[in-house]
Image (cartoon, rainbow over all chains, first blue to last red; front, side, top):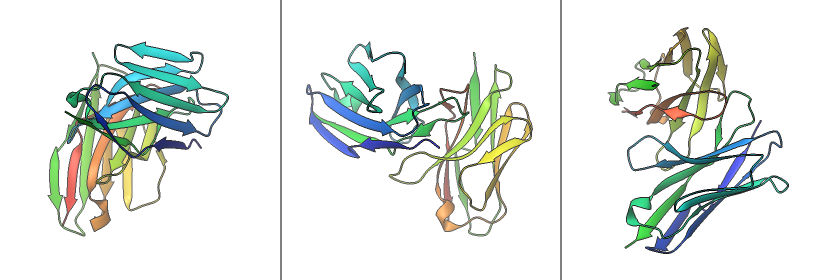
Amino acid sequence: GENVEQHPSTLSVQEGDSAVIKCTYSDSASNYFPWYKQELGKRPQLIIDIRSNVGEKKDQRIAVTLNKTAKHFSLHITETQPEDSAVYFCAGSGGYQKVTFGIGTKLQVIP
Amino acid sequence: SQTIHQWPATLVQPVGSPLSLECTVEGTSNPNLYWYRQAAGRGLQLLFYSVGIGQISSEVPQNLSASRPQDRQFILSSKKLLLSDSGFYLCAWGPITEAFFGQGTRLTVV
């Protein structure tokens, strides 16, 4: 089955700086990679996703990149704000009826 | 639009007691349904998933079980809870790809 590894587990950045979270996956058949944000005590919510036929996708301050050859993908948050503080999960799905999540990255944006 | 309901929101149960968490989805037919558990400070662990009525796949052997008696209903159960069952339980639905989560149930086993 799919195995998704995520790092770092914690990340602290100054407000206005960029944050990068990296994930690797094992199943070369995986073709969909969503990113979720979970605020304290709340459910994870999808913030951005990327499919394997695309190398990069951007939505305002958030971007994702995918390297299929190396089997890794990354989340980039620019101009970080305190409200970006949360736990971020990457995930991979190969169409086998399930989504496999990384362990999560706790992002702290310091004002 | 599709909505997912999960209850209860919080639950405190003694060790050895039974458990039943329920999840229902509205606005879609034949969804894939999932149960995840998130232990404190940990990631999302897939427990069960279902692609149809009566079809349950278990990811992690444990004292939990799941059932899908109706197309849009997914139930997580245990006959006897353990302390290690404490955590944040999330039901989710989706097509093959994205997972949309319910509000979650915070279970504390005492």
